[in-house]
Length: 211
Image (cartoon, rainbow, N blue to C red):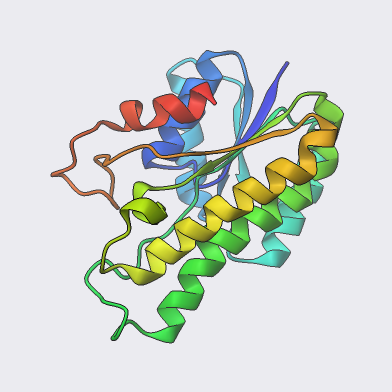
């Protein structure tokens, strides 16, 4: 059975990605830092018929949590076919580069950029064992340099840097037959995107699942 780890899988796009991968026959490890929300999300997916979804405690902003999750994952499976780095924060929606706090910038980079890199490094032994694994980083058009604008400097920086991480890992992991891609889900109706967004979570998850 193919296996996948999805970070931030308890809600929104991550939840839809878990459902989409389960529908394709994957055994899905739903990473979530909140035990209650993670277990509830798994219960909903299992009730919908996706019995092969299970919760994995994982806070991508904590190096200790990442290492603990990797150790637990290695005890549950001997390989990992897909890693979806979905967990992310948007803490500076209404701030500009001249006023946003340093802590908000650092917290955003730690979760949105450093976290995905550390998760990929932690589970790399399992990805190598899959033969032809995939890493998918959930990015954003707001990090696209050719379309860069003002505002949300922490979020924009973190996603631009995540795209750089994607390119670097793609080059460094190609020898192990591990594909690395970034995907933009678009403006999606989530807690982050808001009710005015134009896309459903299923539409946002589609390309991520395809990758």
